[in-house]
Image (cartoon, rainbow, N blue to C red; front, side):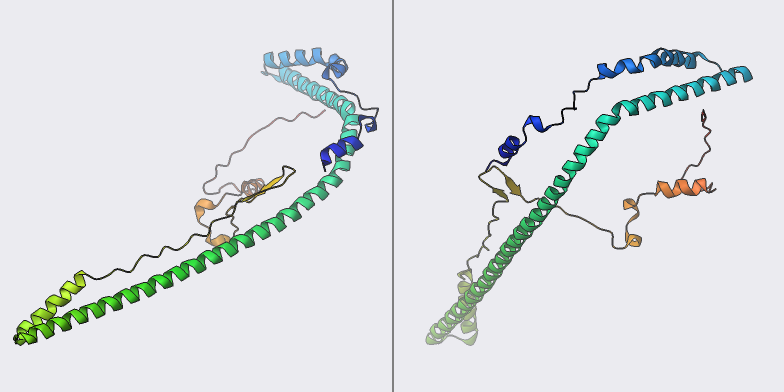
Length: 271
């Protein structure tokens, strides 16, 4: 079922509020026109004013106060203009939020179940791979033991045969020992080697699951960390708490190692 098409069919344009009209900046510009000339004049005056005595100081303060008053008036008008659209946006957002929260919860639940299943599949695959590796190691050890036993018997048989042949020739004990040693060396040179057993690799299944509707899900592996004992965390991973530092400075602290503390003067207009 095409849910998008079904939703579009059930929500025709006629259901939208008739009061909603396209908003343009040109429609509201005239309302701000009375302020524009004065705002530009004040900007030019602020650039040219020189505060050098009490009179020029009072003029600058007066100009700053006027700027603050006009700013308040413009802000009031701005809020008034956007109030109705803002209320409508807020209502629509709150209405849609109900569904979005439910959909987000649904998605989270499904992601958790899918991830749990995929994780268990990976655990099972690793267990099978470990079992195959262990079996290969055991087989390798068995083949080594069998090869060593076969080589031992071959050396013993070669030494025995060499001794029998030497005694048949009425050789001395020294000659017999030398013949046995040479036979063992020759047998050792012909020793068999156990074949190398390769541990099988259990292939990883595709991480992407696709459906007929075009939806796909895949798993992403990420490493995460959490602090269990902040006293053990190396210094290079620590960040100074600037909020606490500023709070201490406001309370009167004037010396903090590694911190520059200074006094700054600012002007505030009160209208």
